[in-house]
Image (cartoon, rainbow, N blue to C red; front, side, top):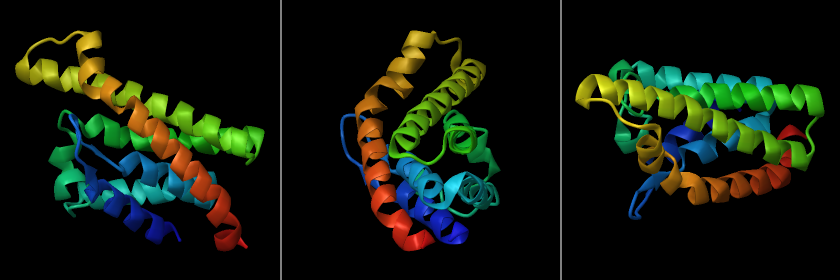
Length: 169
């Protein structure tokens, strides 16, 4: 199940929904994996997904892979998936697996991913192109994704609620 969820994350990263700012389903895959498998196994699935990409397999958005992708401007968001999963695991351990806890931990995990990824983006961007302000970075990297990411959280939570009893018995 861990390997299957890592593969689902790869497929989700390849799904690009065209819009003014295109977005993928990567975060959906992360939330679904942790929701379905629980904190420990879901975090392992996220880690395997990232390690596969770091090893060069084209599992990231745009069929990209390689360690260089992780060190690029948007690599911090991918690394942020680990922190999202860990936070969801912590919430599960402390508060249980209720639907409210799951949704709240997904939202908190997304905020952690945004924070880590945006800080990473600002550092890499400054190194390559010059300094950038926080509001500018947020307007490029976070604000356009808030509504799509909220919809992905709702979809992942709904699927988790329906599929987890079937998968986990």
